[in-house]
Amino acid sequence: MSEPLTNGEQEYLLKIARATLEKHLINGEILEPQTTNQHLWQKLGVFVTLTNKGELRGCIGYLEPVEPLILAVRDNALAAASDPRFLPLRSSELQNIIIEISILTEPEKVEFKDIKKGDGVIIKKGMNSATYLPQVWEDLPQAEVFFGTLCQKAGLETDCYLKGGMDFYRYQADVFSE
Image (cartoon, rainbow, N blue to C red; front, side, top):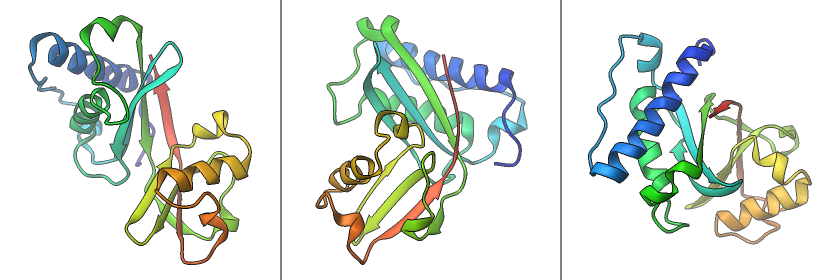
């Protein structure tokens, strides 16, 4: 990320995510966000997380800079509303939904020993991969649990991170929410 987003830019992206969900769930339409702010048109990795009364309701994103930030927020808000781990979000839930956006730095390949608490982590082994955003450490502060469940998320054995043949990546995130 070239420079951090301003508070105003963060608030605007949160409004885009909220308006996207409302327009889609209530009217079945896709929001076409507009801005002349070039900072919001840069390509960055981004995740949109939805929670309902503190419980995860959806979390989808791009690890790599796939599309302009403003469009990535829209598209990942829509995808998070249909996260396959949950039933699709209903319009009746919107009032209880809290939106969180994570803007990611580019992932860097590292050795396992170089990962520290607070890093976003990607694991890859063959065709299997999974990631945890940096804020997952708050819920899973013990490294064994963090990495064990990350291995499970990737469809691997819980101790996969201790065995060879695995690639590790780390990244940071600028996280903000409603």
